[in-house]
Length: 211
Length: 349
Image (cartoon, rainbow over all chains, first blue to last red; front, top):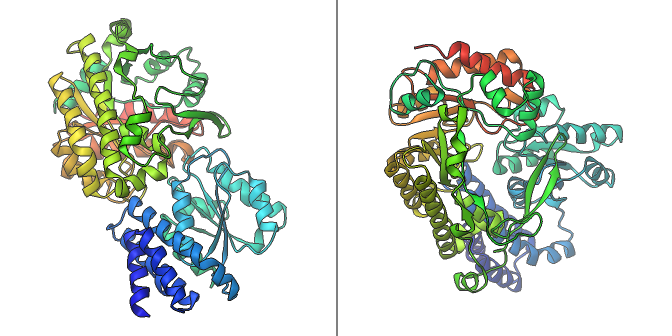
C-alpha cells in the first residue's frame, strides 16, 4: 500500500499527470481508502511542492504542472470521497476582483488550497462584489479569497468587504487577500482577516483559519 | 547638460550635473498630472517637471488589414474598465490549442517586418526632441508568447513543450532583431537605448528557474544586446519583481541598465544592489509604484526620492523613475512631488 501512495505522491511532485491518474486508478482498484489516497498522496505531494516553492527550488511552471497532476487524481477520487462522506477541510470561494483580468496568481492560490484539502469554487476574473456576497450568503463557505494585480483595482477589495458587511454576511466568512501590490498593512487597513505573499503560504494561512 | 547629455554621462560611467529623471505613465495618469499642472501637452509637462524623458521611435504598420480589437499576431482584445480608466486586455490567442510545432507551422502565419514602413522614423526626432535620448527597437517576446498560447499554458509549455517554446521564441526574437536593425538603419548612430525586456520576477521570487532563463532566454537576449552595442546603443533590461538571483547572468550577457528596482521585494534592497552591481550597470527606477506613489503621502514620496538618490545616485549610475507606468490611482500631487524632489535632491554631485 505504501509503495503505491509513494508513487502517486512522487508523480504529483514531478507533475506527471498520466502517472498520477493510472496510479490513483490502481490504488482504488486495490482497495486503498480514498481518504488515504487524498491525504497521504495528493495532499502530501502538494505540501512538498509548496515547500519546494518556498525554498526557491520550484517556480511557477513546476507548481502549475504539479497542481494539474494533482487535480487529475482528485477528479478520479472525488466521487468516491463523496460516497464515503469525506468532508473537505473547508470551502473556499476565490476570484480576481472587479476591473482586474489577471488570474495566474489566483489560479495558483486556488490550486494550492485544493491541494491542501479545501473545496474551491473559482468565480474567475473581473468578479463583481455582489457575486462574492451572493456566494457568502448562500452559506457553507468558510473563506472568501480575493486577488488583485493592479493598484487601480486594489480598492475593489475593500468594496467587497464593505458589501459583505452591508449584507450582514461579514462574520460568516473569513476574507483573505493577495496579489502583487497587496501587503499585510493594506489587508489590515481594509479589514481583511488575512494576507499571504504567495500561493503556498496562502494555503497554510487558510488551514490555520479553519482548524 | 541637456537630458540626452545627462543620460549619456550616466551611461558612460561619468558623473552628470544632476540625477536624470525618466517618466513612465499610463495615458490616464498623464492626463491627470497635465490637468493638475495646467499643461497643454505631455511634452509641456515633461519640460515643466524637468524630466529627462526618452523619445521613442518606431515604424508604421502597413500590413494586412486587421479586424477590430485584433493585433497583427491574431491576439484578440477587449476593453476592461478598472474604474477610472480602461485597459486593453488580451482575451484569446491564436496558438491556443496547438500541440506541436508542425501544427503551428501548418496553420499559422507569423508577422513580417515587411508589414511595416520605417521611412517615417527620421521625422520622429525633429525639433525640441533632439535634446532627449532616443529609444528604438528591442524585445519582450515571452509577453507575446504568453498571450499567443494563454498565460497558464505558456508556463506549462516551459516544462512540457520546450520545442514549441524554442520554435516560437526563435520566430518572435527574429522579428525583434530585424525590426530593431531596420530602425537603427533609418537613423544611424542616433538610437541611444533599446529595451531588452522580459518579466522574470514575481513579487517574492523568480517566476522561472534560473535554468529555464538560461536555456530559453539568455542566448536570444544576448543577440539583441550585441546588436544594440554594434549600433552604439545601450541595452535597457526591464524585469519586474524579485530578480536578484539572475542579475549576474544579465550583466554577463552585457545589459547596461537594470530596471525597475522594486526594492520592497526580497533581495532587491537598494544599497545591496548598488554595492554588488553599481559599477557594472546603471540602476533605473526605484520609486515604488505599488505603495508610495499611489497610496503614500507627499512627504513619503519626497523621503523615498531622497533615499533613492542618496543610496543609488552616489557617483552617478542612477536614473530616477517610477517602478512601472504611473497609474491613474496615483494622486498628481505625489507625481509632481516625486519630480520636484528629484530635481531638488538630484544635484548632489
